[in-house]
Image 1 (cartoon, rainbow over the protein chains, first blue to last red):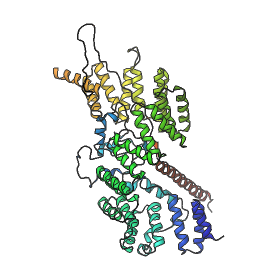
Image 2 (image 1 turned 135 degrees about the vertical axis):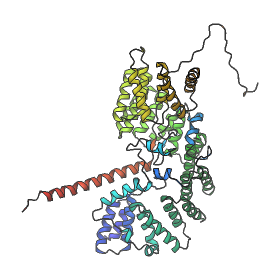
Image 3 (image 1 turned 60 degrees about the horizontal axis):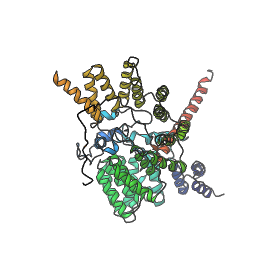
Image 4 (image 1 turned 90 degrees about the vertical axis):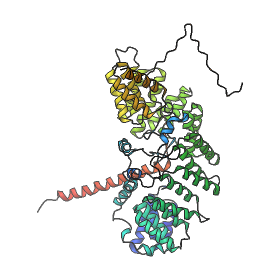
Length: 508
Length: 74
């Protein structure tokens, strides 16, 4: 069989490794064959390709030594940084109903590479616990992609396929069939943004600034090295071409989000929707921004629009379901989650959610079975810990306090830093009928562990303050109640307690 | 009466009516787990397989060098 035909057929069937092997065999005999060279490049980039629109993480350095912010103290509603404070005040996302993630944002229905969100200050960013799942890279150029890149280099037996540093970029920019695959290879496999940028710049020039694809690529490269204004210019110029696709709008929106201008991003998506009506990606991105700004109603409205156009969009279903659950409609949430299950997704998180929804909509028979499944499917310690923690709630609802303690203990076995489990263990300890048997010292240390591991929780601080008041340690109480109120300013009982303590101080 | 007008509660202040607020310790709320997006799953899978490959190669290299070390001096 003709090796090129065989390789092409393998490529079409997505058997990239086999295809790359065929290509390298032929390239050993004839190193200058452009067809095989290009095909091998495409194979290698397809193997490591991820949607770089979605997979993007900001490093700490980009976040905090950021020179692009317009206002350090932004007006409420115009910045993603101040959103957490607003979220605590709005009823739909109130902290006493909907838990928050480590960043202080209300918990979201879908976990994406960028959902860590922006921490407020350097101190906060560095303090956020760095477990294997939540580690934030120092800069995005030292992040996950570079690690992936180095790993893929290691796994190639005879060194890298192309030595990018020695490539005559000007020459390759003029060969139309080769330049685009080469660009993708440099960007995705080698992660060498600077050379990719060179190639894109040469190619745009060669095409006399008439090819929107190169302009968009140039914009992407600028975005990756943090030159946001240049990225904005390039993508805007790409948008002037009539044949430009939805991608450009999405990328421009991303640039604005990185600049912390969510309203400008929303405007871009709105323009995009004028040109491409009913485009679900644009709507999803806009919904994410509304969610990050704690504008849940707008977000849910957009997600519902998404479902009208694309009824199997998992992200939209998951977000709507979570919103219903925390708005006191678990039975509706249950229907949404069941829909996801019907579509073939089946993992620990989903079964855990279905179990909780079943319990709170009083379908007790299904609950335990769902949690059993969730534990069976769980493949990470963090998830297992969360499942045990939720199970403790259900057991507590059934009135079995001893079993609830065991469940929380099991959560701590899987994840020794589970702050919510520590807090609940403390509460259960304090709720023992006979006050003399409850171990106040142990309870205190439970709450303290919870407060130290979960900087985003107000509950442990409030509980500690309550202990302080009951045992007469008013200073201890005052310090903790202030921390609780910082995290959740409108909590009724915390405010009452604060006023009581304040009166005592004033009378002294 | 329009629907918007608030109805004020009538709380009698005579007789055997008393009001007491007792604050108790707060539990953390049950946590629905966010699902993972396809991109995130793929990224994690890729990272894992890349790490495994790298580890495998390191082991191979190490065993090769061990063989070399085991050669007797002459």
